[in-house]
Length: 243
Image 1: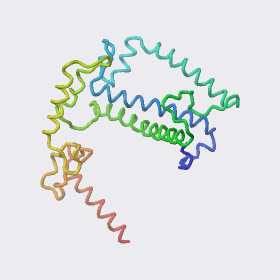
Image 2: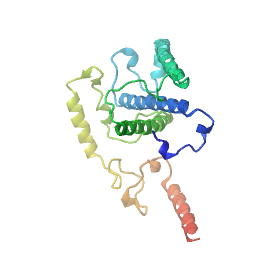
Image 3: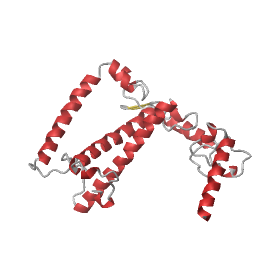
Image 4: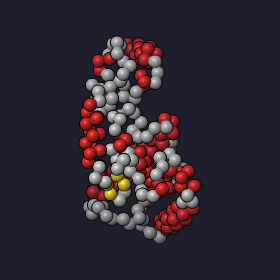
């Protein structure tokens, strides 16, 4: 699935068996889809009960090392990798008709060939997106020291899921959700991007009425320097278009 797009700019498929590459791509995509959901859920306040799990997402690795969990994870994941390698080896030797990434799980899997191909393509594309998303989330978390979504939100945003646990929610959950929604409505939002907060440092500049600053650059850099750079690049490109 996906070969009709013809995307292989580095020509890896000419040097490495395409089945090996697709197996690796699907594996990493699936892991990153789970990792992205897990990271966001943890940043929103969801926790597995128990002292070892009451840490932030960035601190989770060191906490697992501290409590001696890593060796157990290595054993069980190594066992799964062994079965995966055996399946892959039999596929390469022609002993099975297995396709890359196929472990025989058929729950919610379409029975017709068209539906199967569409499902495979969706998994492939979502896996690729998740690999980029997880890389961005991990990088942003380390650089900013903040939690997802890494931009200004309502003060109660982080408390929405604070009363949730994996085994169930407390009775305070509906009130927390209601309070958070009310607080978010009360915030001033950008006119051009109403799901983001209103930029605070654009007042007095031409075009400030659109309130467009989705990355919040004006909160980090001097807005006069940003406008100088924007106008310079705009003028250069305008000259290029006239030529």
